[in-house]
Length: 208
Image (cartoon, rainbow, N blue to C red; front, top):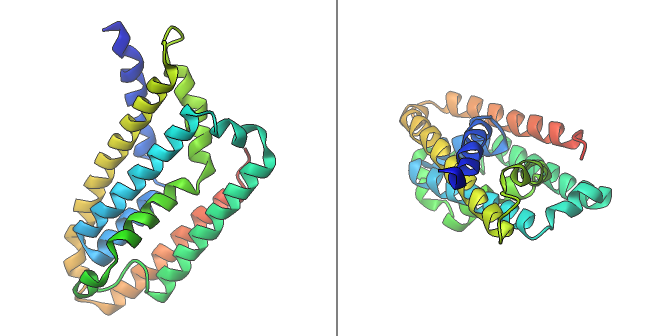
């Protein structure tokens, strides 16, 4: 049981993090409302893939560069800000997330997956969070600590995926109602756009 204690501890922390709203939450919900549950799940898989990329970066020591290099942190941070602004513009225009359900088949599977991954990858705070948390749960006696880090990263991706799946089924229940009202869709588009702008602004002022 002792060897599993670090994983149980990290599982608790991981769940708390996954339950905290962020850009990925906004993307998952808006994609589901606009394209249905199927594409919501595709975006969810993209988000989990992005989390795995962060875990891999920590395991390989790449994330440490973000911690000690202001230039690297600022570069990734403003890429993230630019991407969130892009998502906001798409929401305002109605071209990205909240289209009518009857238009959902036109959505690009790869684009939905890619955008879900980018929502995670272009957020340097995720790498720094993992860089700060994961070493605390890695056993000092582990012969391959990088494997432990990767395993915990996969665990967090799974936990986040489960949480987002619940969001998808909740949002999917609202989708049919939204397609009956252009006014509600327009309101949701603008609300989603401002949410993305808000997360972008918060990321812009974030410190390493």
